[in-house]
Image (cartoon, rainbow, N blue to C red; front, top):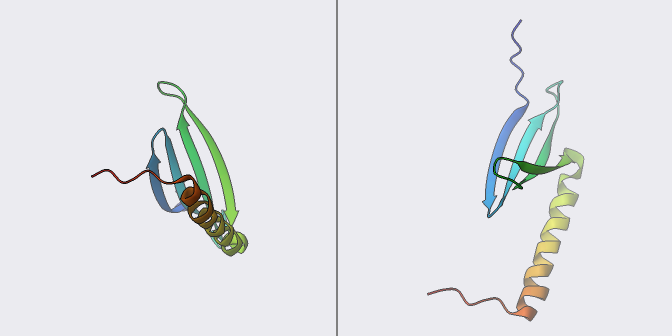
Length: 90
């Protein structure tokens, strides 16, 4: 019997230099629930990658997004402005 179950519902890839980040929405085996995985993939050899994965469950989405937003905002307003960002190239 063929299983029509598809674990991955949505994926978004972000390339960032030597690293690639994957944001995946996955269904549980019961298909009644879902969660997000955030994976960092970094090239460490010619065809070798090191991966780190974070599982984020729906009951934690809001707390996670708020903390991430606050942290990024702090870096942008408190740290980057004090250090001075490089001027955009013309």
